[in-house]
Image (cartoon, rainbow, N blue to C red; front, top):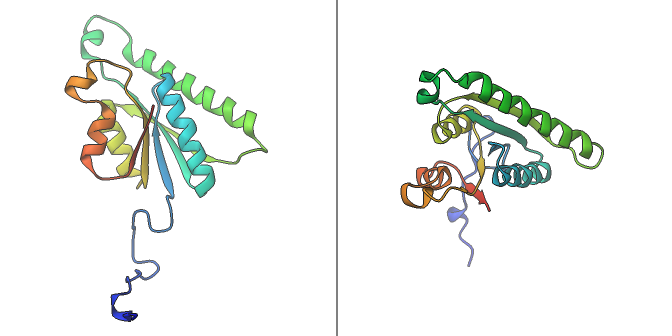
Length: 161
């Protein structure tokens, strides 16, 4: 017996932002230049292509107070990493032009990786976050960025090994 009153209500068009209703529209991928982060970006690019979603590749420039106090030009170093990352992404997009089409943008700003990814996901109204698994042994004790994102429970999080 069918009960029409139990049908799920569908929100009216234009009723505001709603995460994940028709598949992801924005996928955030964290990139820091590590092998795991490149695998995460590649995985996220495949998701974005299949879902016709925007891929937002996010690099959070770490704040290194101690290094700055010692006179190390931290902003220049992290800026160079950001330029290198965007260069590698552009080269990959060019290699795949005509085979795959992915809309993407590169976002970078200073901060710690967890808070930076949270900020990016919130500002971009992300439907999903993709990060690489941590390669650092200490994260098993204090928790990795990936674990913290999963525990936040605000977006589906995919951790790519």
